[in-house]
Every structure is written in structure tokens, then in C-alpha cells.
Amino acid sequence: MSLVVMKFGGTSVGSVERIKNVAKRIAKRKDEGHDIVVTCSAMGGETDRLINLLTEISPKYDPREYDMLVSTGEQASISLVTQALKEMGYDAISFTGHQIGMVTDGAHSKARIKEISAERLKDAISKGKICIVAGFQGIFPETGDITTLGRGGSDTTAVAIAAAINADVCEIYTDVDGIYTADPRVVRGARKLDKVSYEEMLELSSLGAKVLQSRSVEFGMKYGVDIMVLSSMEEKPGTLVTKEDIDMEKVIVSGVTADKNQAKITIRGVPDRPGIAAEIFGRLAENHINVDMIIQNVSVELKTDLSFTVAKTDLLRAMDVCEKVAKDIEAKDVISDEKIAKISVVGVGMKSHAGVAADMFKTLQENNINIQMISTSEIKISAVIEEKYSELAVRVLHEKLLPEGEDAS
Image (cartoon, rainbow, N blue to C red; front, side, top):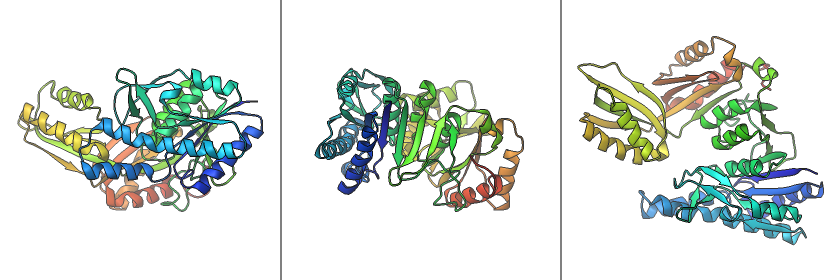
């Protein structure tokens, strides 16, 4: 007998029929002799529906009220899945994040998990119950307020629970059957990976691959939780996310991604003196706004332009902060650009193979795609380009760096 955590996304529980199918998948694993904990997302489209209602009332909504509202989506789905299992004769029980001791910090809409006591969860498992837990949510103990972990946060919930209860594996069921070398909807020749390292998956997730939330991969890597990505619609082999091994380094590039949820902010006429960058990015950090790529132009007459990217969903708040700090430091003005995308190539094999950057930039040049910003690490290269070229860029880079016939596993 093993302890298995199963996570089902919004598409998987998007209708009563699909909820019943999910219940059958869970029941099958239970019948195989496993102890089962399940994490569920809200029904497909429900979170967007709730957010749209909130933004109709106020585009600059209170983050606390956002969390209070959107957390209800997961509570509905766990109750429905639990009831479907009960109708099949299985002893199942649902829990909210608060009920299993999911403690987070107080950063509404993007809270980070601090600890999971899981005592009530462990007690239910010991009694043979199938436990269905609401993903995406926790509680800030200082106020007792509900918090949410950011879009895709149910993945993080599942992996964090797996770590807290020492599960043997965390199975993530989605509407795709694994991790691909690129989005199959964009690249016809995209291939499924049999396994991928935590490091590669962390980069792919943070750079636009929407299969796993990046923080769920962080948890898996930190606590050594194997993550299996599987299809909720078909029973077929998936992709294992695990620690790096020697075979993985034989593949130079594992994936090409595009992230359209990016916006660029430029503060123009910034005084070129020590402490200015610390002031700007310190203010953004105080407002829980993550900054990604940063470029500072050469100083002219002790003035410079500073550009950086943020998530498009953070743009309004980031502009408010930047306009205030620009006034304080006597910068010229602040402008933004939402029509950008970040294109990235990822692979642990890049650590021991040269020439990937040259091939990437030459391929973009040959297709008349201009690069606005560049960022690199040991296993990834990213470039900001115009959004309208994002799909073309992914296709031509995949064709160049992952040609047909090359083993991507």
C-alpha cells in the first residue's frame, strides 16, 4: 500500500459528468489498495467568472475580498467530488485549506505556504477515508483571513500536502497527457517528455508553460516529491518530474515556451546615482510585485532609462507604484507596453553545450523578429519580443533547436 496525492484541475471537474469520471478514477486508485488524498481546483471557468464579477464592480478591487470570493470555487468542487464518491459507496470527506492547517503569509492573491499541520488530514487517512482538499487556498493566522496562492495554486497545494504527509507520489491530472517540448496547439511537431528535471520544469513553468505552477515544482524539488503529470481524460503514460540524472544532460534543449502574461515598464530620465534602483525595486517589493527582466540604458548627462517586466496582471498596481516613486526621485515619466511576450528555451544540457544562444538569436533575426530584452541562466535563455510574433518565434525556434527525429525524453 502507498500514499498517493491526486490533483484534478478545473477542466477535469468542469461538469457533473466529468466530476463523476474523476470520482471513478479516485475510486480505482483506492481499490488498488492505496491511501488517497485528492486536491481539486474550481470547476473550469468558475474562477474567471467570479473575477469578472468583481472587476465589473471595481477594477481596483480589495485583494482581501478577491480571496474571499474566489476561494468559494474550490469549496464547491470538493463538495461535489466528495458527494459523487459517497454515492458510489466510498467513505470520503472534504476539507478546506483552513481545516487541514494550511498556514500562509498575508499576501492576498499570491500567498506563500508557511506550514501545513495536516493533523486532521492524517487522522482521516488513518481511518481509511478518501480526503478531498480544496486547492489554491489557506489561512493567515494573524487575522484569520482566507488567502489564495495565485492562479494554478492547486498544484502547489497538492505538492505541499504530499510533502507534509510523506506521500509516495503526487499525481497531477490535467487536460494534457504530460509535458511537451512546446505547446502542441502552436507547434505541430511538439513531443511529450518521458521525464524532466525539477530545474527544467521550474524554468518551463515560470516562463509560460501552463501545465504546472512554478511554486509547486519548487516544493517538489525542495522536499524530493516525485510529480507525475497525467491526463484526466485518458489512461496513458505521462511525464515524471524528478531529480536530474545523467541521461537528461544528453538533451541540449528540452522545451520552448512563450509567456504572453508580460508587460514592460520603463521609467525614463532616472537620476544616475547610487540607491535609485534600490528605491524603485524596494517599493515594488513592498507591494508584493515581482519583477523579472531588467535593463538599464547607458547614462547620458547623469540620466538613464530603466526598463523591467512584470506580470500583466500586476501592471496597474506596478504603474501606480512607479508613478509615485518617479515623482519622488524626479524622473521624467513612466510608460508601459502590454504588447510583449517572453520567449524562452530551456534545457539542462545547455550547461555543457555552447552555441544555443547564437542559434536562438540568429533564428529570430532570420524571421525579422526584434529582441527588446535578454535574460539568461545556466539552463535557459529568454528574450522579450513583440507579442504578435510569439507563436511564430516558438515554431521557428522549436524547428531549429528541437528538430524532428531528436530524442526529447
